[in-house]
Length: 184
Image 1 (tube, one colour):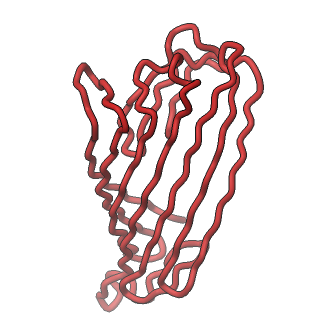
Image 2 (spheres, rainbow, N blue to C red):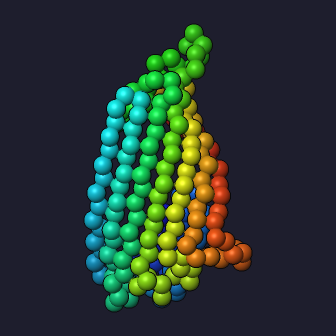
Image 3 (cartoon, rainbow, N blue to C red):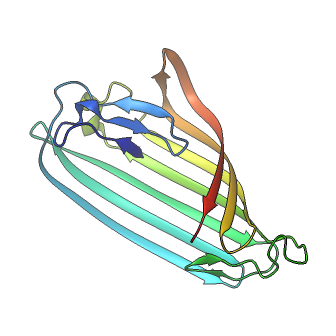
């Protein structure tokens, strides 16, 4: 769940977005964060040569208008570098950089599943209350060299219950994301 906040303590102007940056909810007017926020999470990773698996689970307890609300999110992601380079904590370094001799760079395929589960106690604060949101992502990353990474991802976001976005009812939203990263 991504969000863009307005004023501190007042989520009435918070637009909540999916991983594909599609807005799906805004807190009802008058909703205020008026207490403590507790976030508990666990993360795990396994990296072996060109293969990597990562996962994370987080549970959030938040106080809104003197009510305690909860939500849980997490993901599992697997990737494999098809050109054989090792996947490390710093990423992937192309052993055969593009435009050097010229060559292919490094290519990686990625699959990811994520879930956001909203407890019923959050329903009064969100006009769109899908209860659960699952996102499935398939992607390809190209590491041209140590400075340039290009990502292409196809995402399908599935809503447990229909939501209304820009006046239209949706049970799923599909997106394609393209990203160029320059790393120094």
